[in-house]
Image (cartoon, rainbow, N blue to C red; front, side, top):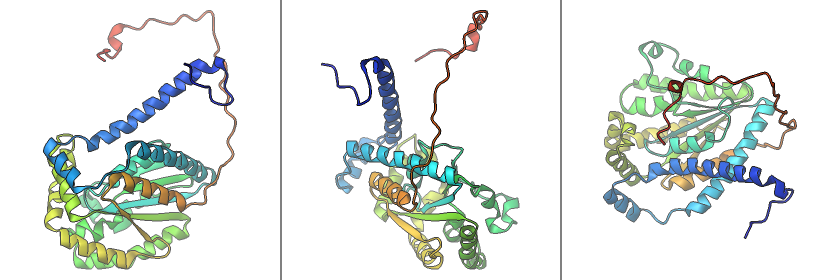
Length: 312
């Protein structure tokens, strides 16, 4: 029994619809590949993790919501580009809190020329002698751009402070400077959005164990991550002071409950969309031009050694 055609389509559209369905299937496969990162666990760790968690969101409901939100992100992207808006989104939180996962889902279907992800390494010796904010400034958006910071200048209030990479005088200077720095950004026309991903002590322990037992995730673990377990309370106190001293009306903090990764992603994206009065923007109609055939052109046969071996 043949399935009904979508409204506005005829039987002649069959091959095109089959192709479109295949493309959508490939797109879903990409989502499944991302989700595999949550499945690469030893059976024992998986069992313990399941015992510690309530029933997660249904997979089908999750993907339906995610794809709907991602389609809205495309509309937001078009609005930002059309109106030459400038947007900065900061993602902060403890190690393994889920920042990278939500950044992947936000940027997954967007134009990398419009939406950029910035994840800076530790500062070089030269950068350590610069004005603290200097190395972040070149990555700020121009008109029509969104920049997602996977960690940001708030490193000074967190890891640098807790691990002793910054003196108390430097931290105090940061707290004095950062509100005015962010107000300057806002006055220049940049929208600054700050997210803190919050997880419990027990949840972080489970996620670290998952990384230890998963060869595909071990690269995510660093000596600094392991120290963060030892200094959990130090990080808590540092976070509390950071929130108290940098939560300004021009750039407030938003806390995302992160123990359930999938719900955290959906909640964060939904909230981000709600911060902007985006609406449909004009688009030029696109038509595919006819292929030009030259009867005198003969395609050259390339040597077989130029081709990548077809092993799969």
